[in-house]
Image 1 (tube, rainbow, N blue to C red):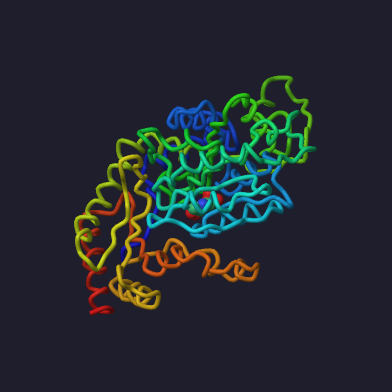
Image 2 (tube, rainbow, N blue to C red):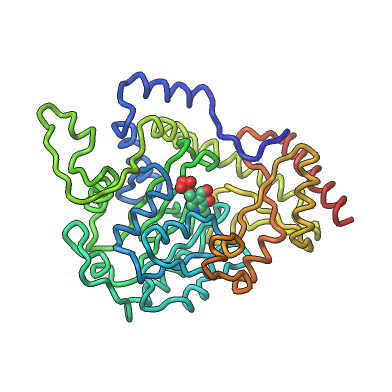
Length: 408
Ligand SMILES: Cc1ncc(COP(=O)(O)O)c(C=O)c1O
């Protein structure tokens, strides 16, 4: 049986976790701070905060920007539910728009959906391929002309909506840590970029996430970090590490914060993962994707995913193969036929309007024809560090045989 996406856990990972446990420091501490510094250096931004998931990190970003009831946030219809759920958690409305053939949000559809209630846009780097963030940033900048900030908002002594004066671009880079746009690592393009380090991601901390801050002046990365650090720990003015200094016990609570800090056990895994990421993880994932490309590209039965173009290079997180002429039912039958051959595949993602919760909220799949079209014929193939070339060939054989069996 070939699994879909097991994490890479070896003696180094286990030794790093052991060391963290034996150090006596298991909550947020020196390893988390070190991980944050290295993430910031990797992304080319002054500050990164590491938290316990993309979901909680990105939701905190919406809260920081004071997004709430009456506000709208533009998201692609084609994404994991977390992208829209965080918008609902803060009481705002996710406005879904369609995607392009490469699965990323259509900047023109974003432009058409903008209105004075729009407070934020969340492009998603599906499968690791960066969305057209520069175009989305341009659309956000156009909103300067009519943006209507919440006036009575105060966050850490100022009003971020007044300060930015336009819709915030919060990138969902849950899949794309290590991807590049114009040669620069993802993280240094959108206002705030959120990463996921969930167990199936390219770089994992078991569960985890991070935000890279790239807001323009007069925002200060240190002040932003301070607010997120405090509010990820109940609004407490000192975290556990700061309180360990002799005599430094007294603290204040500046606001009703949340609880979504990263632990040093998670950071210990992340530090090992990060150290070998560029030299080892990405090259192996890229080689697997290229082996799939060599087998499927040029065969008219298949559409291979865009892994790279002249501006963007993905993180090789998913290999999102499409069966050119398959209906949804045929695609499902092909997956069953692949499973019979002891290979696990997946579908990324069921567009949100097809899921009962969003359908019951009034979202209609007919309004997102490209999301439906791409989803109906999509099959994600296994991509992970420990997948051998022989196993990749087994997957290829299974997929081709399954397609032959179902489509003839
Ligand atoms: C596109 C996308 N956004 C957000 C998330 C949420 O990430 P996390 O599990 O770290 O909260 C995921 C998780 O799989 C995802 O695929």
